[in-house]
Length: 193
Image (cartoon, rainbow, N blue to C red; front, top):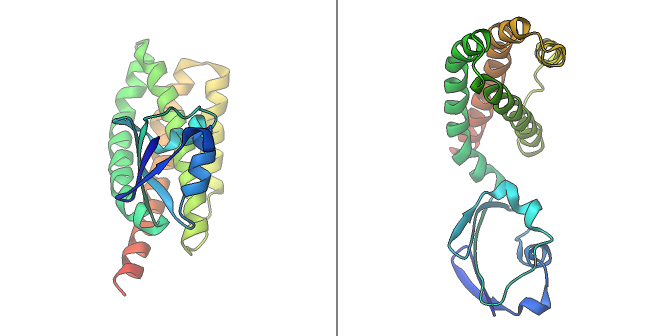
């Protein structure tokens, strides 16, 4: 038997009835809700890893705890942390640029993390437009700066990459910060009515 605790409600299933985690997830996922947290056998699993788990075979005696919430509630919980993350990242950009200029190996890991973060922020931005009605913000100047950053990465000129990290990325990240602050403000405005 598999024990599933879904938003506090305990259920039991036979593993053979679903075979994979994805089939179980599709069966029990509440409509119009998003996964807020997932724990499998007392191990917290990041929600973004669900797609990687879809083909995983279910094990008998597994315990799966899932908490779902509305998209708006989820956003109202995560956006303050994301905004703080962006502010911190902006503050760290000068030191990342300096570490690039001084040839520290760690700086390339930082650049990779920054690139992944920007991609995740943009994905979240696009999803927010599907959830909340917001004015469409002109992003052409930001796209130009992102393309410049990407082309400096392709060119592999350390000095150019460092300059782009120092001059372009703060503006890119600040635009995401402004967008998420606008979205959070709109969510709070709607919830207070």
